[in-house]
Image 1 (cartoon, rainbow, N blue to C red):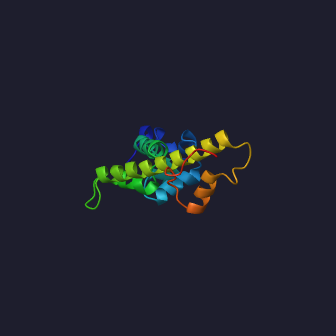
Image 2: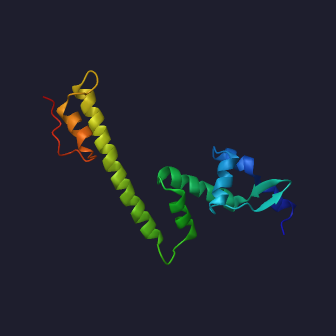
Image 3: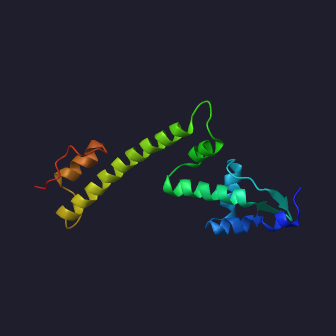
Length: 147
Protein backbone atom coordinates (compact mmCIF):
# COMPACT_ATOMS: atom_id res chain seq x y z
CA UNK A 1 0.00 0.00 0.00
CA UNK A 2 1.36 3.40 -0.88
CA UNK A 3 1.61 6.21 1.60
CA UNK A 4 1.50 10.00 1.16
CA UNK A 5 5.25 10.19 0.37
CA UNK A 6 4.86 7.57 -2.39
CA UNK A 7 1.86 9.38 -3.88
CA UNK A 8 3.81 12.65 -3.96
CA UNK A 9 6.37 10.97 -6.26
CA UNK A 10 3.67 9.85 -8.71
CA UNK A 11 3.11 11.71 -11.96
CA UNK A 12 -0.32 12.00 -13.61
CA UNK A 13 -0.68 10.88 -17.22
CA UNK A 14 -0.93 14.40 -18.64
CA UNK A 15 2.31 15.45 -16.92
CA UNK A 16 4.07 12.26 -18.03
CA UNK A 17 2.98 12.85 -21.62
CA UNK A 18 4.08 16.51 -21.49
CA UNK A 19 7.55 15.54 -20.22
CA UNK A 20 8.09 13.47 -23.36
CA UNK A 21 6.33 15.73 -25.84
CA UNK A 22 3.48 13.26 -26.27
CA UNK A 23 -0.28 13.33 -26.01
CA UNK A 24 -1.93 11.38 -23.22
CA UNK A 25 -3.51 9.20 -25.91
CA UNK A 26 -0.01 8.05 -26.95
CA UNK A 27 0.74 7.01 -23.36
CA UNK A 28 -2.57 5.12 -23.26
CA UNK A 29 -1.62 3.45 -26.56
CA UNK A 30 1.66 2.26 -25.03
CA UNK A 31 -0.45 0.80 -22.21
CA UNK A 32 -2.70 -0.98 -24.72
CA UNK A 33 0.41 -2.46 -26.34
CA UNK A 34 1.59 -3.74 -22.95
CA UNK A 35 4.65 -1.49 -22.87
CA UNK A 36 3.73 0.70 -19.92
CA UNK A 37 1.44 0.40 -16.91
CA UNK A 38 0.23 3.00 -14.42
CA UNK A 39 1.13 2.43 -10.77
CA UNK A 40 -2.32 3.47 -9.69
CA UNK A 41 -5.56 5.05 -10.76
CA UNK A 42 -7.37 7.49 -8.60
CA UNK A 43 -9.50 10.57 -9.10
CA UNK A 44 -10.19 9.23 -12.59
CA UNK A 45 -6.54 9.56 -13.63
CA UNK A 46 -3.63 7.26 -14.29
CA UNK A 47 -0.52 7.84 -12.16
CA UNK A 48 3.05 6.72 -12.85
CA UNK A 49 6.09 6.24 -10.63
CA UNK A 50 9.79 6.76 -11.30
CA UNK A 51 10.20 3.26 -12.82
CA UNK A 52 7.42 3.93 -15.32
CA UNK A 53 8.87 7.35 -16.20
CA UNK A 54 12.22 5.64 -16.89
CA UNK A 55 10.52 2.92 -18.93
CA UNK A 56 8.82 5.55 -21.09
CA UNK A 57 12.19 7.28 -21.55
CA UNK A 58 13.62 3.94 -22.74
CA UNK A 59 10.72 3.38 -25.14
CA UNK A 60 11.09 6.87 -26.64
CA UNK A 61 14.87 6.54 -26.88
CA UNK A 62 14.65 3.22 -28.74
CA UNK A 63 11.98 4.61 -31.05
CA UNK A 64 14.01 7.69 -31.91
CA UNK A 65 17.62 6.49 -31.86
CA UNK A 66 17.19 2.86 -32.86
CA UNK A 67 14.26 3.54 -35.17
CA UNK A 68 12.64 0.51 -33.59
CA UNK A 69 9.00 -0.46 -33.90
CA UNK A 70 6.85 -0.83 -30.79
CA UNK A 71 6.84 -4.59 -31.40
CA UNK A 72 10.64 -4.69 -31.35
CA UNK A 73 10.69 -2.54 -28.22
CA UNK A 74 8.17 -4.85 -26.55
CA UNK A 75 10.47 -7.79 -27.35
CA UNK A 76 13.41 -5.93 -25.83
CA UNK A 77 11.50 -4.95 -22.69
CA UNK A 78 10.18 -8.49 -22.24
CA UNK A 79 13.72 -9.82 -22.05
CA UNK A 80 15.11 -13.00 -23.54
CA UNK A 81 12.41 -15.34 -24.81
CA UNK A 82 12.58 -18.94 -26.00
CA UNK A 83 11.81 -17.80 -29.56
CA UNK A 84 14.06 -14.69 -29.81
CA UNK A 85 16.89 -13.34 -27.72
CA UNK A 86 17.73 -9.67 -27.28
CA UNK A 87 20.70 -10.22 -29.54
CA UNK A 88 18.47 -11.60 -32.30
CA UNK A 89 16.10 -8.64 -32.05
CA UNK A 90 19.04 -6.23 -32.27
CA UNK A 91 20.73 -8.12 -35.11
CA UNK A 92 17.47 -8.08 -37.10
CA UNK A 93 17.13 -4.34 -36.49
CA UNK A 94 20.72 -3.70 -37.56
CA UNK A 95 20.08 -5.60 -40.80
CA UNK A 96 16.86 -3.66 -41.42
CA UNK A 97 18.77 -0.40 -40.86
CA UNK A 98 21.47 -1.54 -43.33
CA UNK A 99 18.78 -2.11 -45.94
CA UNK A 100 17.16 1.25 -45.18
CA UNK A 101 20.52 3.03 -45.36
CA UNK A 102 21.18 1.44 -48.76
CA UNK A 103 17.84 2.68 -50.07
CA UNK A 104 18.43 6.14 -48.65
CA UNK A 105 21.91 6.29 -50.22
CA UNK A 106 20.38 5.33 -53.58
CA UNK A 107 17.71 8.02 -53.20
CA UNK A 108 20.36 10.58 -52.25
CA UNK A 109 22.44 9.60 -55.28
CA UNK A 110 19.46 10.04 -57.58
CA UNK A 111 18.61 13.46 -56.16
CA UNK A 112 22.23 14.57 -56.41
CA UNK A 113 22.25 13.41 -60.04
CA UNK A 114 19.15 15.50 -60.79
CA UNK A 115 20.63 18.56 -59.04
CA UNK A 116 23.94 18.21 -60.88
CA UNK A 117 22.61 17.36 -64.35
CA UNK A 118 19.22 19.01 -64.73
CA UNK A 119 17.87 22.54 -64.54
CA UNK A 120 14.31 21.22 -64.50
CA UNK A 121 12.51 17.86 -64.58
CA UNK A 122 14.83 14.98 -65.50
CA UNK A 123 12.48 13.58 -68.16
CA UNK A 124 14.46 12.15 -71.04
CA UNK A 125 17.60 11.55 -68.96
CA UNK A 126 18.79 7.97 -69.65
CA UNK A 127 19.64 7.47 -65.97
CA UNK A 128 16.21 8.67 -64.81
CA UNK A 129 14.35 6.73 -67.50
CA UNK A 130 16.20 3.52 -66.61
CA UNK A 131 15.25 3.99 -62.96
CA UNK A 132 11.55 4.57 -63.49
CA UNK A 133 11.17 1.73 -65.98
CA UNK A 134 13.31 -0.84 -64.18
CA UNK A 135 11.38 -0.81 -60.92
CA UNK A 136 14.71 -1.61 -59.34
CA UNK A 137 15.67 0.46 -56.27
CA UNK A 138 19.28 -0.73 -56.58
CA UNK A 139 20.43 1.41 -59.47
CA UNK A 140 24.16 1.48 -58.83
CA UNK A 141 24.66 -0.52 -62.02
CA UNK A 142 23.28 2.32 -64.18
CA UNK A 143 25.82 4.86 -65.33
CA UNK A 144 25.47 8.22 -63.62
CA UNK A 145 26.89 10.28 -66.46
CA UNK A 146 24.46 12.35 -68.43
CA UNK A 147 24.88 12.46 -72.17
